[in-house]
Length: 261
Image 1: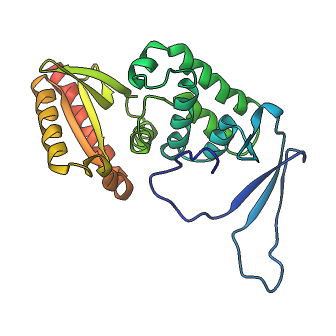
Image 2: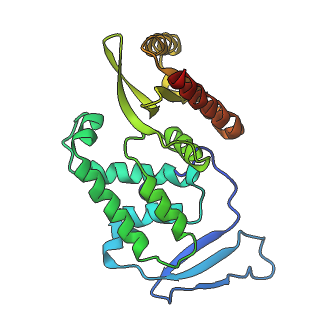
């Protein structure tokens, strides 16, 4: 894929391929039939589509759709926990388009809310041209809930599951001070003082024992500062997302109980 946007935590077997064909009327066309004698292939569905010039570009001499159009297409008709993965990253790239090289991304995004709003507007403009198309309602919801502060597909997917369960919407990448140091929580419910930590294994690869010690000190400091910390791994989210969400929900219930005690 031209933009290498993340699409989900793990690949799933596709059930069909959808190909948008510029210039044809906006309509779903008949699926392409496999000629006799050839092996069975995935069904290919053609979809006529308007493709404005501003949604086209060229990368490595190959005509492709724009970043905004590509991200929206990856969200159409998909559940939020999947669609937030590419659209978070697309919004992040749009919001950082004018950021100076080597800047602190967290600080830049905190100081340039207008860049986030402008990037979201560009994504919403694509969905506006797709009104009535299959799956566009899901895409528009994903764009509305996208957050460029998410720093990994695991964080985006986790937030999607939380929102699908209609739990309180968490903040993303919030600075939290504990023991005189500033930490950043993946998902933060500030008023309830709950932090959700999505642990991907790749961050432990270089120095596993050192990273484990650092995470232990970090979590101890946050707990001493009065925060409830709930953790999960990418494996858990992939295999038993319901268990992860129940764990988060239990932490939020516990936090409310503490506040009212």
